[in-house]
Image 1 (cartoon, helix red, strand yellow):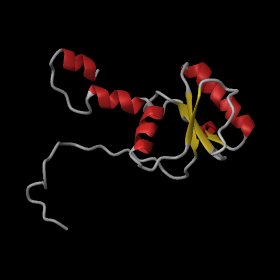
Image 2 (cartoon, one colour; image 1 turned 135 degrees about the vertical axis):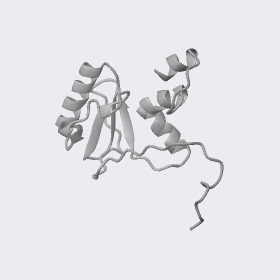
Image 3 (cartoon, rainbow, N blue to C red; image 1 turned 120 degrees about the vertical axis):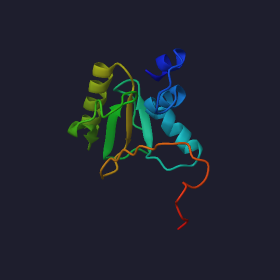
Length: 130
């Protein structure tokens, strides 16, 4: 939608096209985070269900489609505790979403989404430091 709005020169709020495209490609986003030495769980992308699991990947793991948003493809079965569950979940993702599966080290906790508004240069008027 943002690409269409930009082509039509219609103003919109939210991220630009490149940002959205990158964010939807989870493996690429994780590579960029790692390149900039930002913490991200170890991960592996599966193009086939029978690919060997990398040595640095230990259970529990978490599997999801590599290019979906808003929790698409994420369920209780996304938490993987053994090799059999891994192969089954990766197979389901490959078949249902027709895209690679992203498997990463599972981190227990709540997922939080945070929206940011604005492009301020410096402190917000009226805010005091500290």
